[in-house]
Length: 445
Ligand code: CTP
Image 1 (cartoon, rainbow, N blue to C red):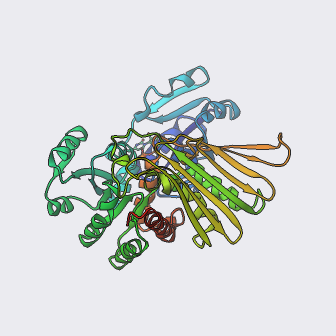
Image 2: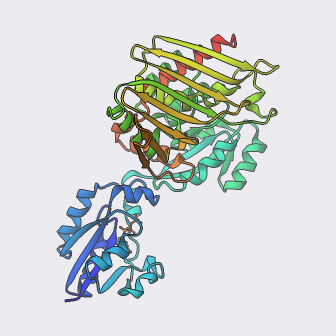
């Protein structure tokens, strides 16, 4: 009996898949089909797969060509499967030519001609239509955003606005997109606005974008006052638009896993959360020059507040800020103390003081710890009373991590509103309230 194996995602099963499976079956007597798990697809950067694993397996089954279906969960699995199932022929479509030649030592490798003019990507795009993104702002984060957005199928970054047209033009040339100095024309060119301008301009641009009926992804801190934050969310709801605060940590798989474990009671009742993020900045950078809205806390505070608000909620009893400021009165280091009915929390941020970046969650039965850059969570540990009682967890974190938030934004726009749990409107409003309290405590507003 000749055993054949093939692999794929088989999302929105189409004629190309059908023909591939049909010919794979004809190569032998018994066909095994490996269908990728959701985790594996995400790990290799294939975001926005629409069908669930169960649906994809069901669809492969319905073709009638598969004698056995297995789940492909990791990179090295093909090699193991070939040995485990005694495979004679490995086959995939011709889009993979050469890439699996390393398996030739173990079985025959056959690349079947790919069916022209059809792919899951094409079907996904047709179903949801490409969302055009325009960026306001041309700074560091905007430059990081574009390559990440390129990895999310279903979006296309095509325009940029900066009131200084020379900057917009430079940025546009670099990324081969269009530069605008006229806001009306800019808004006409897009479906989603990504706001990456200085903090204090966010509120104005969010309102403007929503008034122009555009979805909004806004960099953190989205708003610097609670009332403004509530107002823009209300406006977004009235207009049935998605407004999304871009705190990338909230959407990264490792952080979500960490929160799930922490809140699941594994370390008992949580009594303390300490989060620290420092990043030394040049004195001449905007972050350390803007006397009103610059400084460590407005720049980095959102990251440190995130685990605190996700774990304890929004109803703290007391909040206190301690700062070390430079000669201009800008905080180069800030400590925030929060007291909740059942626990304590500290957030430490520094642009001019370096400290150990760490997230430490302490409970009645143990603690969870993760090192810098914990805001791109890829590893954490659970410790208990005995020093050798340590559980270690790893999770993928790809690239700069913005791809996860862009992918979630797109899911929300396409109607999957459930994703809101990662960073809720309530979380964003609470953060804006804390930013406001901080600015007031410093006499800046
Ligand atoms: N395939 C094919 N002809 C097509 C599309 C896919 O022969 N038009 C083959 C692939 O080469 C692979 C298998 O079907 O061997 C599963 O491919 P998969 O990646 O799931 O499908 P795509 O349509 O290529 O998906 P995507 O657009 O998400 O990359």
